[in-house]
Image 1: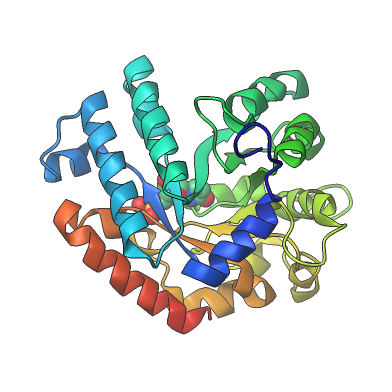
Image 2: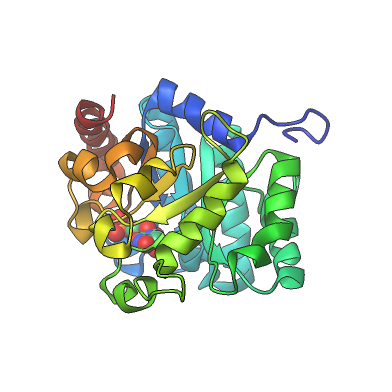
Length: 289
Ligand SMILES: O=c1ccn([C@@H]2O[C@H](COP(=O)(O)O)[C@@H](O)[C@H]2O)c(=O)[nH]1
């Protein structure tokens, strides 16, 4: 629900609409302590609040970017006042019409996951987001309650599958008894939740742009089978991936990738952010129409 009464359109449809109107760039709201210092802000809740609101304002004003991804860790590190700051940032972003992906990477056994669903996906809750990142180490089935809550509220999930960090390889390329990789198993079980869609579903995957997906067990056929599954792709800029690699890395999924950038744009400071957004969104539009 958007206002507690009107049912929201499904997340996948809303994401598709943002792709059409504002493109695929997603700006991470990652107030690292070193960035706070660089921006002349204090390393406390008031600093992350100002940082987050400034990023939201710049993204909304750009007219070229429609998705933000606040990194919860950097707010959580200041305790309850950090969470209060996060609530303000989330609310400002949603009020500005931006699609908000909460990067909280929640995930537990099913009964506990219901608590996360209540916190992040319930319309009107203080931490309401449009989509949430979650882990499936307890099994994709343990997410069923969050999936049901998301569907009821027009929300989405992005489930970690092949993450961008170098340490992910051993675990995520481990083979199941049937011969699939862990990454691919997660991907296929998540994609099953989108099976009734002809266009984008509400349940996506985190696939790092720094990876060769064939190394993680994704054959070309496996990628084609994910055609209604949106992809949240971190790893650009600071972690080394380039926009021009998107068609090669993501193949048939490239048209539905949410391209996430944080430090590479945030390092330009409050005054340089608008220019960085303009440059990145223009460069990305050359790659994903
Ligand atoms: O596999 C993953 C999953 C999430 N992330 C998050 O994305 C941003 C990346 O920040 P950059 O500054 O653009 O490197 C950050 O919030 C990570 O927690 C990821 O990098 N990889």
